[in-house]
Length: 114
Picture 1 (cartoon, rainbow, N blue to C red):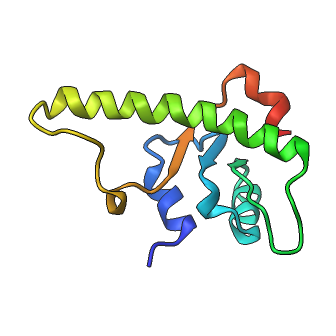
Picture 2 (picture 1 turned 90 degrees about the vertical axis):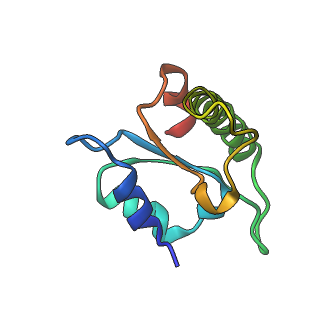
C-alpha cells in the first residue's frame, strides 16, 4: 500500500520543498492535509463530498482551478512520454499514475489555495 507521505517524498526531485502539492480527490483526507501543513507545503488536494457534508460553491470553484492546473501538467507529461517513447500509445496504466503533482503554484492560484 502506498502512503501519501511516501509518494510526496519520492516526487520531490530538488533540494527545496515544493510550494504546493496538487493531488486528485483520492487523497482528500485530513491526515494528508496535516502532513502538508506540518512540512510547510501548500494544500492543493481537490476536495470531495463527504457523507455528512456537501461541497460549498467556493470548494467547487477551487476544485475547478486545481483541475485546470493538473490537466495542463498531466498533458505536458503525456506529450513528453510520447516523444520519448514514440511506439507507445495512450496514457500509462493507472497503477503507474499516482495522481500527485508537486509543482510551484501559478500566479492565478494564490487566491484559490488560500
